[in-house]
Length: 136
Image 1 (cartoon, rainbow, N blue to C red):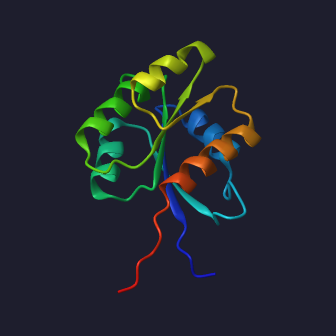
Image 2: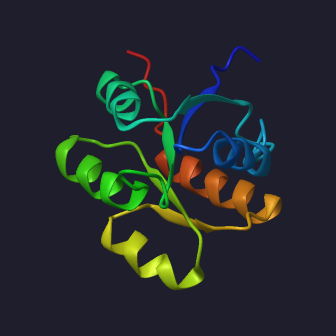
């Protein structure tokens, strides 16, 4: 029971978008993963500080954020951070999925967010990221 909660960074310049993402994914995206804790970021500098500090197990970035969107930011992070945590990009249109692929995102969510799909997508990405603990 002492397992530390995974940390998810949620970025959007709009508080209501961050809230929608957090509500859709929930505090426990899957029974086998345990709880997650959220850190909210409304600006690029906050995202960079958290990512550079290694405080993030997964980031969910708003592809429509202003002035810099999550799609371009994802590509920057994937190219600049060694062993970059997985990133999920939330887009407004299904047709924008190709941009998220270009950005090297690990997964894509499409607004309006479906809680089942959002939680399952995040859980799948977190499971793929999990590394077994090595005791030595």
